[in-house]
Image (cartoon, rainbow, N blue to C red; front, side, top):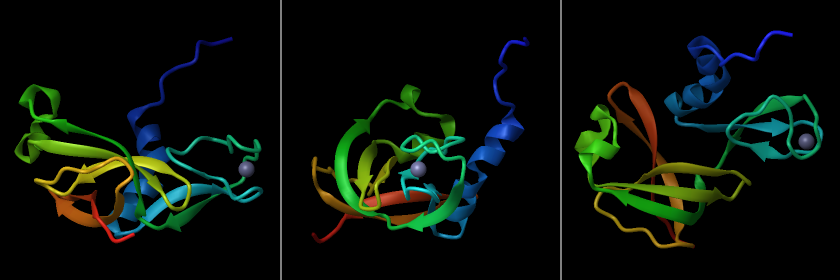
Length: 137
Ligand SMILES: [Zn+2]
């Protein structure tokens, strides 16, 4: 039996294309199980809740609550194309539609655990980022 290999860059792009394509259209898209409606991110080949192979793209809301956050101040900890974002605050958000994901936090802000946030789509260097800001509860 051959050894498992790492997915190629092309395969990775294909696996994540639905997400990047959604962001480019200012839509937050995840995979949702057609059998049990479990939402997942990042995408897996099958549903981790029920095992079904039947998944569909589903647009979800960008609203949620801050689960955790960090502030990055050191240039050597980010890629060159993110150096202009320092200090960079990255939040982990429990979205209302059942997915936890990372995103930038509004520049200059300091989030709080449990804070209510909503994401906006921001164009930057030919791509679309999801940037979270404080929102009304
Ligand atoms: Zn399922």
